[in-house]
Length: 225
Image 1 (cartoon, rainbow, N blue to C red):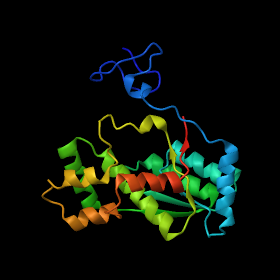
Image 2 (cartoon, helix red, strand yellow):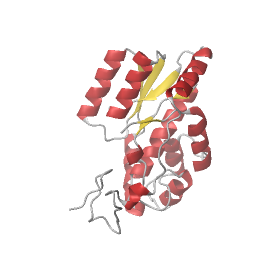
Image 3 (cartoon, helix red, strand yellow):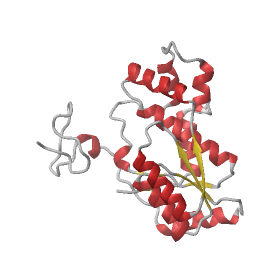
Image 4 (cartoon, helix red, strand yellow):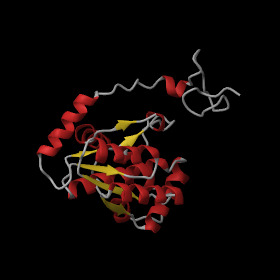
């Protein structure tokens, strides 16, 4: 079995190809991540501190290695006043919940949990899976919408969002983070109202462009490998 040296995809994946370095065609087309450097990162943090808000940064906390490490860096290394938040996507494992509790206890930061209406969330996941074969996009859209809402409500200057470049490919031509795509797919849902969809979106008129613009200008995504 041939397995990609960067991800877990093997030669059984449809139409997959591998280069001489053993990297699959889905990974090889990705742009190489270029860090801005710690000095520029510290400048961003110092500018956030100068705003003298209650919190310097919002850290979305899923209980995974990326977000827990970001929380550690923000509190202990860069000495930021941090607000942590967790979006309950309906799939939080007991291990993730325990990691979250331990991380909050160790860092002693304020923590907020955002939880959508469960029955609406389940209907959205079900219909997205039926009509697109994917629920990750709905989960991602819901997560980012709640992150933006908490950041707005508490006026945090920056968002420190831990992610991995290996998790950003939807493996389909269109973007699963596109809100217009999301609403178009759910037009076929018979058991969802427009209000339920809009409430889940938090910002129903936010499009993919403005979401990307906000992320670029207000968030500091920190890549981990």
